[in-house]
Amino acid sequence: MTAATKTTPAFSPDQVSVVFVLGGPGAGKGTQCEKLVNDYSFVHLAAGDLLRAEQNREGSEFGELIKNYIKEGLIVPQEITLALLRNAISENVKNNRHKFLIDGFPRKMDQAISFERDIVESKFILFFDCPEDVMLQRLLERGKTSGRSDDNIESIKKRFKTFKDTSMPVIEYFETKSNVVRIRCDKPVDDVYKDVQAAIRDRL
Ligand code: C5P
Ligand code: MG
Image (cartoon, rainbow, N blue to C red; front, top):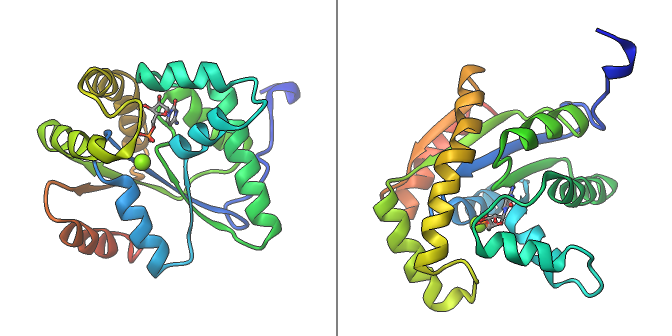
């Protein structure tokens, strides 16, 4: 190893604790995260929410790009998402908040590698495993009121494809490190949550 290639993450896992929350679109990541925030002292950072906020921020140079990627169900270039997450984490750390649920990230291998190299190593991955037909119904239902540009059948199909082709390899990668807590989520929200609590009890 040459000295030039060695970089140190911004935080150590003792300082900052990160749980990645992954799963297909409509698997219920956000819903379960909200429940965890109520019961534990987590900060919930959803990569998609950060991107939508950046898209809508007046003067953002990335607004148009993010809008197009989201509509097409594609993964926004990692530099943008990593910068948003790094800022959000730093702001919270300044306010003495050190435990994070990072929802919808990493959705591509490069994001996984960069985040753990530059920001902090994750504790484990909470993976919501859900059949596609269940996710489809949930997204179509949500689309009636969400106002999201990607909760329509054309975008949903593209998001499913991206999940299979680009995001599943991330979960498989963490599985090789035995770092994945897999939760089946084709059942009522409160039943899923009980499984989540039981599964993470020993890991926190
Ligand atoms: O997680 P959520 O469904 O809110 O993400 C919406 C969209 O935001 C994704 O389909 C993708 O276009 C973009 N996104 C991304 N990279 C991430 C998370 C979300 O490009 N890590
Ligand atoms: Mg979400």
